[in-house]
Structure formats: C-alpha cells, structure tokens
Amino acid sequence: MHIAFFSGDITRSGGTERVATWLAGALTEAFDASCCRQGAHGTRTRISIVSLFEERAAPAFPIDARIRRFTLYPAAAHGIWRYFATVRRLFTLVRQQHIDVLIDIDGILDMYALPVKRLAGVKVISWEHFNCLTNPDVPYRKLTRRWASRRADAIVTLTGIDRTLYERRFTPRCPVTTIANPMPVVIPAPVYGDSSRLILSAGRLTRQKGFDLLVDVAARVLPKHPDWRWMILGEGEERMLLERRIAETGLDGRLILAGRTDDMDGWMRRADMFVLTSRYEGLPMVLLEAKAHWLPIVAFDCPTGPSDIVADNVNGRLIAGLSVPGMANAMEPLMNDAALRREFSQHAQDGAERFDESMILTQWMSLLHDVAAYGGKE
Image 1 (cartoon, rainbow, N blue to C red):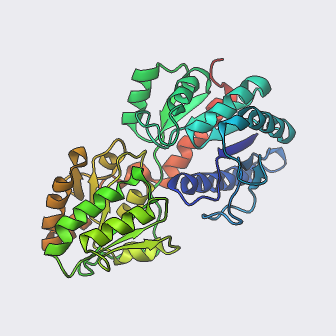
Image 2: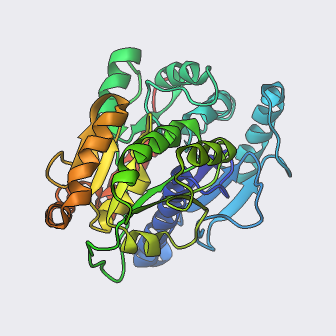
C-alpha cells in the first residue's frame, strides 16, 4: 500500500505540518517494523508526502529519510485559476506513483483530491485541522466540507465536539472519526519553576491567533506587574500592526515579538504560564506542548480544542466569549500567587492519556486499514 499525505506546503512551520510530519514518520516506523517481523512474506507500506509546492529548501520539522517528497509545482503557485491544472497534476502523480490513499492534511485540499478519487480510484481521508464552524482564508472551504461528507472515504476531526458538528450539519455518508493530535514527549522531563515571571504565547501572527486581543490583555495586566515580561513567538502578516499597537500601549521591551524560534522547548522550560488568545482552533499543538511542559494555561474557550486540553480552575483557566477583561481577571491571581501557579502545574498532566502518541498511532493505523479494505461510498 502507498499512503501519501497531501499538503499545501509541508515545509511550513505550523501545527498542521508538525503533526503531519510526526504521523508520517511514526507510520513509516510502524509499517517497516511490521514488514521486518513478517520477513519474506511481508509487504512494505510506503509513505510519501505530496505538496502543492515547497517554498523553503528544508522543512521546519524533520522528515524521516525513508519518506519521499513530491511537489505538484516547482515554485509557489497560488490562485483558483490553476484548479484544473492542479487536479490534472495530482491525478498524474497518483497514477505514476501508484498511490492508494491520500490523506488531505487540510480540508481545503479535498477540492483537488476528490476529483482524483473519482478519476483514479484513490481513497481520500479528509483531515480537519480547524473545525467545521470556521472557514479561514477562503469562503469556499465550507463547500469542500460538504463535498467531503458526500465523497470522502473518511473524515478525521480533532475533537468529539467537531465530530458532532459534522454529523449534525452535513449528515456524512462516510465515517467521521475523532483522532486527537499527540502531546509531545519532552526529554529530559521538565521541572516547573515559578519564579521567572515570564508569560509565553506562540503562533503565527495572524488574526486567527488573536494577538491583537493579547495586546489589549497585556495593557491591563503588565502595568500592574512591572517585574513580568510577555514573549510572543512566531511570525506573520500582522507583525507591523502588532508592533504599532505595542508601541501605543507603552509596552515596548515588556511585550516582545520574539519571532520564530528553533528552541520552543527552552522557552517553555523558562516560562511561568502559557496564554492562548485564538479566535478559533482545531486542537492547538502549542497548548499540548505547554501541557507537556507542566505549564499553567490561560486560554480563550474558543471553538475548538482548549476545553479538551485545559480543565478550568484545575490546571488553567478558560475564558468565555473572547473577553479581554475576563482574561485579564483570570491572569491576575496567577501572576500574584506562585503557590497557585504550582498547584495548577501539579495538575497539568490531568487527562494527558487522551493525547498519548502510541494510542493515536494505533487509531490511525486502524483507520487506514479500514479505508484500504472497504473505503467509503461514491
């Protein structure tokens, strides 16, 4: 069997690319181990990654050397006017490489994969990394979700809430399965400290991540706590807007846009708490990483994901309605009380078993077996 992960650009540094490269590598290791155990009777399952294009020479996250990478275009290629050319290129690649299963790591890619399913008979798994209530970047994303519900062989959601939403809104003809993102294993094991007075946030500097709201929160809490700093890791198109707003609040040097980092682990180990201000998510990898580092978390209870990771008033705080005053009020007790931060940290791993890597890998292998054996309805 040949399984290919279909990406817009696998060299990007987002959570979607991170979990996809992890899963591709984990499946490669598992299938190769199974083949070795079977000896001469074993048949090797191939794993590949197909991108529309790759803008960077090297991927942001390491990719197993056994995994082949393909691109449909040699350079960045944007625009819906390329639609039929892209379908044709994907169809040709599927035929040439004898791909049996395409895993669309962004549901918008279903618009290319589903016609190829009809033409070439490839099985298609639509992997939802946002949630079915949100349509980032392009309004026709909601149309591809409806199409996937009719034509895909399976849909994977990150949360049970999103699976229920899919079932209610679209009445899918294919199975809808919930498989969470994995919580990373941190080595060596982190030791939580409560005295750095460092607040950490991370993500692409886009409207989705709500860093404009974060600046408003910081303007309420940092002036009351002159010994605290707030670091934002990441880059994006809203950097200039955020720099201007930070300057207007007089928080230069205390609320810092630190840019991209290759040392997220080091920052997590130094932080006293993690804050997420997203307007929407799927199941945010950055919160799972904060959880793995035993950090207290304060997050907007946006759709979807934070409520799957954070237990309110147990290991963090969840704030309804994207409320800036509500988040500021939730942060104040944690900033004032190191004992409360330690208490939340001690419960950080509550519920972590749902995000165990080996369990998630098993769920994916079971789904791939079912899809390869039976598939969905045409």
